Amino acid sequence: MTKKELRKLFKERRVALSPSETAAQSQAIARLFFATFPVADFQAIHCYLPIRRQNEVDTFPIIDTLQQAFPRTSIVVPRSLPKTGEMEHYRWSSSIELLKNQWGILEPNPDTSPLFPVSKIDLVIIPLLAFDHQGNRVGYGKGFYDRFLAHCRSNVLKVGVSFFDPVETITDAEAFDVRLDYCITPTNVWRFSPTSSVTTRGL
Image 1 (cartoon, rainbow, N blue to C red):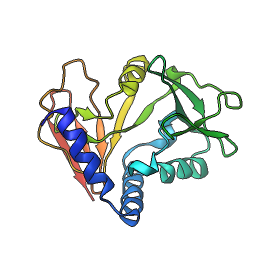
Image 2 (tube, one colour; image 1 turned 45 degrees about the vertical axis):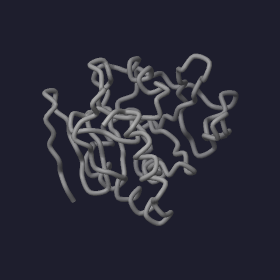
Image 3 (cartoon, rainbow, N blue to C red; image 1 turned 120 degrees about the horizontal axis):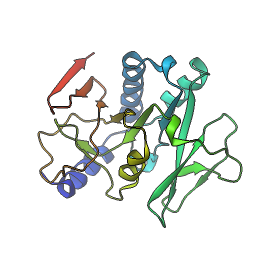
């Protein structure tokens, strides 16, 4: 299926999840995240803030655990710049002031939050709608994360999160698309090798 077809299909599948399903599966994804990655070794983890009206994977279980159990690891959250298609990045804190942008997404107030350098980010948690067995991903089609990831270090870990298992192939994926290194679902961690094969670890 194409990106456009998958975008429509998985938006519908995700919206159909109940609040209790979304919460339970988000918690399961968070548990697998901390069981998989050596979080204490990372200087900074970039994490999106969920769009709850679109039933995105809730990342607050990850953010809250990072704050409480890993105080030396910086949490970094994005702010979109619609005119340029780029994002700015800010250090998260318990006192951070959040504002809603034009799409209703919570973002840090740039007047009260400190910017964080992209070069210091070790891992990026990436929102998506669908992904395939090669690590290709389908987002909302605006390209914010493609541009952001192009500015990151070459060895930054790119970790998607999804309520659903991968599709076989995204038929219109391009060679220049930025692929995932991992994707976490409620029951598996999917790891993508440089040769596009995939290994999984179940619960």
